[in-house]
Image 1: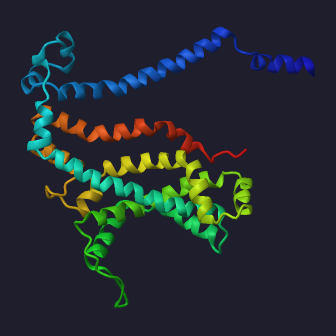
Image 2 (image 1 turned 90 degrees about the vertical axis):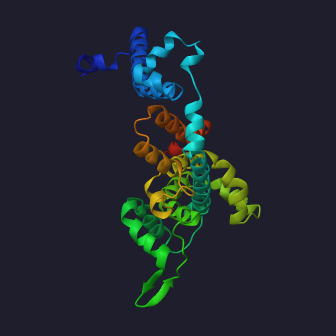
Length: 312
């Protein structure tokens, strides 16, 4: 039996040599580099084009700038001045901030309290309610836009009895905040509940023995420990709301005073589609803040997503 085992399993059990391990690592690194280059080259081309004059874009490719990097005629910031001032992207940028920041903070705040309750508070129907909340993640956003808009403009009635009053939220920031909060809460509660539920029970018991209430335990103990999970969802929610076009268009409209960057960029494509230098500058204006948020919080990203998946 030992001979058969050695014959059958010898090749599989043989450890890899140093050269094989080095080749495996370099192969993986090479594949990652190739994928990164394929993603970055078009983006680099857009970035270079956003700083080029209009006549240069129409007569030569963006890669030709590397032959005359020191030539001041090769570069210009006029594209960004035009898109921020004349085309109204600056005001749209501020509108997007007014929409995105509250629409990120509100669901995180509510979800953190709810996640702690689902994880460490004992109340009737807790498991059923959690299943219902998680099940709401499958509700398509597009299916709820018209019912929500009707509620915003006329309230809701059941058998002639008013259930939700007419709050006149259409065209207001509050309407967009509530819509993004409602559709962001299920995922936020699911992620944060998994993380908070993976915290050691002995830690919660020690806090209870010391006389801490649930609120004190949550504020002073759970929230500081849950920063990675909170940051990971903040990235998701911020990017989702910032890049959203449909919800902002339905609930805010496309008027210049409330237009967000996605709506303004779509208008530029329609009205200035031939002006590549303006479109590339507008595209990068919409990308600056999301990239800053992602790279600023990326060290929490993987930690927050994988936390709670394995205990022990």
